[in-house]
Image (cartoon, rainbow over all chains, first blue to last red):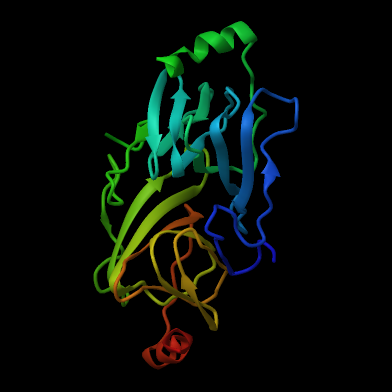
Amino acid sequence: MSKKEIVRRHDGNFHWEGVDVLAYKQEGSAPFKDVTRQVLFEPEGLPAQLRYFEVAPGGHTTLERHEHVHSVMVIRGRGRCLVGDKAWELEANDLVSVPPMTWHQFRASADAPLGFLCLVSADRDRPQLPEAAEAERLARPLKK
Amino acid sequence: MSKKEIVRRHDGNFHWEGVDVLAYKQEGSAPFKDVTRQVLFEPEGLPAQLRYFEVAPGGHTTLERHEHVHSVMVIRGRGRCLVGDKAWELEANDLVSVPPMTWHQFRASADAPLGFLCLVSADRDRPQLPEAAEAERLARPLKK
């Protein structure tokens, strides 16, 4: 089954017919922990992708920034996000908008995954990563 | 609160901070029943919208077709969809791709709403509606 199928069923555990579970990023390209990626839609005639990311309990995405924006909707579990210099608690169906060139990171809670949809441009710039000391300072709001 | 807020919380009942509940279409413009529309994201730099539609129990969207495609993910309740000459049962997290110029309609079940995300181009053509007799023929797969 391919992305051209009209209906692709959910299997009850956040996998879908014809949708591959991919590595979040290339191994070693950036620091992250326990994240998978699935591309749900790449619509014909629209330069956009809708992806599903799942961060396992205790895991986190890369702390990064870039020009392209993220439009995020949590659909599973709970956790926290850092956007700029603030952190927020997240639960199912909460919406997050990450503005251009704003440091951000998503973290699952210790005892539940964090699964979210992320709408992005199909054509996007490469993420920037902070230096290690800078990363520690930037992530401070997540530790409060 | 506006769509520029970084985090917009879900209220537990498929409404969100700063997101207005809109009429699905202009009254009398097309046949439909018990549908609301909310625009969740109109991302900066991306000619796309992510909307949330909710069809009340027993309700349905307009039977129509157009050049722009729909990328749909069910997030609440259950129902059925017609796409082309086939009908499918739908449950939470199922994915539906409506190809260009393909007749389609979404119906909630009698005893539950059908709530779904719909990703579309921000710039889209006007839907075409069938004649009444044609509509009856087209909707036949939904009645099986």
